[in-house]
Length: 463
Ligand SMILES: *Cc1c(COP(=O)(O)O)cnc(C)c1O
Image 1 (cartoon, rainbow, N blue to C red):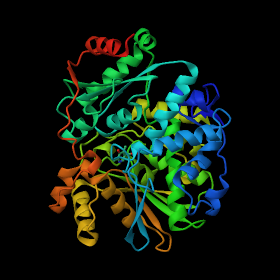
Image 2: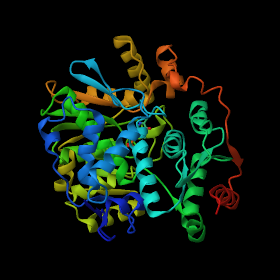
Image 3: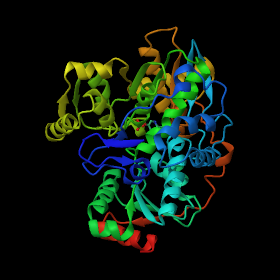
């Protein structure tokens, strides 16, 4: 497979280069030159087959010829051996043909593990082949940092430095990062906010001399390989609940990577009826799907913090499809968006999206009410992100005869306060994390100062 940029100006690349490049040189995102049809996905042929096997078959056309099917298969097998459920992503029925797809059985209890456990291994495989080492630097407000650390810990080709705002992430989230014992993992607690951390990372990438000195790299959510890995569970879920027949999905959405993977599955032949884009009060996507106009608004903090976004970076990939893969149009619309905070789509382009996508928003009161309701009805605890997805699924389901699958994106124990507030029950960490609160922590507090942080990165990376 070859990959093109959504802005149409960057060089066309193969999978290995796309993996390491991340963002395209023209500021765009890489997408496959054409969507491959995956026969078994279209016909229900994956029913009853193991996750690792299905994953290898779905991803092979996206990585060949850069990476062979057997090499891919070995990396996939290793990635998912870190999961704590034999089904990797088990399904649970909520009743009336509504299912919960549990994506939180990886090492950090959030769905980001599904992609990052594989991407870490792909990175290492590629860097080792090239005889290269990189320094991955990232900022986190919670979930992404621990998923990246777990994915990259102990890899010889990578040094990983994660900045988090000191005292502003939950104790569970901090400990999931700081208790990982690996020489290549470095946690920095910055005296500042998440935005300060993000600004420091941006400034490091903008400092070209520093950037090449330490071999700076990122595994952020616009990396194509992350989207690719997420296509798989749409196919395995559909093969379980209705092989070869239409299925709908509800997706708690932030940066749009997860729901775009559902779109990609449909391009590959999976008969997806509806894709419900579930948002909290940060409802820019709901408003867009109602009106055809994307208009930015301030971000407000919610009970589902991983969905507190203003602009969904992966939306650019869908926009590219909406305008019939015309990179110039994408560039024009996003330039307008940056300048004015808004852009609108022509009705043809909008219809290509709105045909399958429906938006729904839920505020914090609704989130707590849904967590309480699911607990009362079924005795199940769900996290606030998943609750937003469940409520959206119930509100938007168009055809009761088509099964609906809500993606459960985090384990309830990751957000124990909200769950306890809603139900009176405090969710427990799974056994493999039971000692999290007793393990020693390793972190370095630093001032919110670029030179200080860069000096730390230079020392940590040994350059
Ligand atoms: C990252 C995240 C999301 C949002 O996923 P996107 O791919 O960014 O849309 C939803 N829920 C949880 C728990 C997350 O960690």
